[in-house]
Image (cartoon, rainbow, N blue to C red):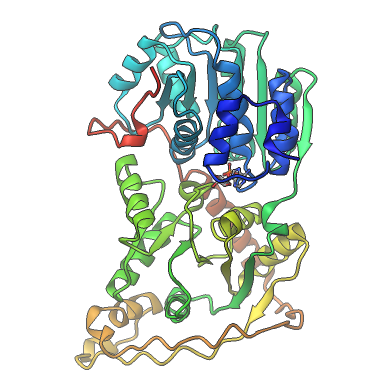
Length: 475
Ligand code: AMP
């Protein structure tokens, strides 16, 4: 099937050709004609499948006719995070260049004043995170009664982040006669319920998970000791491989992101970090450095980096095995994009056995175990004192070892050319029930924390707005 068969306008056909797309992806081929026919859609698809263009392209054609009115956006796209909202805005800029459509982006961390001004002028497309949208709605800056098109993107992530009540409320503010498109990587019961309540006779389209079918990503499990200094050693060893041009390294906690970035910098790596505690301008600045190649390592938390579309990422490292198997799919999907090849390494400590099992169950494939030589012994700094030799915890010890002075003596050995072997199933060590319970309590608590990783709409920022966050185009 070609783009010309989908019913898009000639301008858009030219745009997609200019973008270098030769044929529609499966989600685009199924969704675009139905969206143009004004049907409601449930799209079960991940990022990386081309789903953004699947709704942005037909929306541009649908909205080409008609006029916007002050404070009454004609369409609304809800995104769970600022980064995804900004990315969708970039897509509108890219595909909508030369079209007379106006757009506003409502995300936390950016001055409300500019956003209100944009709304006052009237917008065709409003892209928002639920929290900031509700804020402005409650202040009376937005009327949603003229909004005839609604896109709920990444619905399952919205659920993880506790946005479903907000979304339900937003849905009730829109006119009943409207078109609704809902995209989600998975369909847990609350999302199904949301769809049943707010979509009219939707067409359901499901496309394959990109990671489970993306043969361009070589995936390896790296067995590691649980201590973080051991994991960091292993990581430095792997980062020392020649083929690692750049990498995104995922951690389960924000504190690990910060500590790991600090340690990598101390070891002379050009690294940066991105997580939910950072202000929006800071996050965008780090992303920009990574995109430009000024840094080649980005240490990231799940929520901050989810769905990011950065071309040419050669490696993904899961410094911590993800708790949710879905996150694995999302994380490794940051590499091997657009037909390129990529490599994903997942560090697995003995306690992560269950997480790994879940990942392999979800992706339907057994991931090769990587056999590596032990990393070279790190020499202790010569100036250790008696105090240093006193009993200490592993974490304190590592701070000594990662001090810049140790740099000159540590040599990261090259990992052998990825020689993988299948490992016999690991025999479970008998565990004390109480300890196990405690661990699972900890894990539950950590999971809750990880979902609170992002508070998209906290804090205001009144500094300059980066170019792609400028509020309108066209007109
Ligand atoms: P998404 O799933 O929307 O995050 O898109 C993932 C990537 O696929 C983006 O970099 C798009 O530019 C790219 N893309 C979207 N549609 C196509 C297509 N038909 N052919 C090739 N690449 C595409």
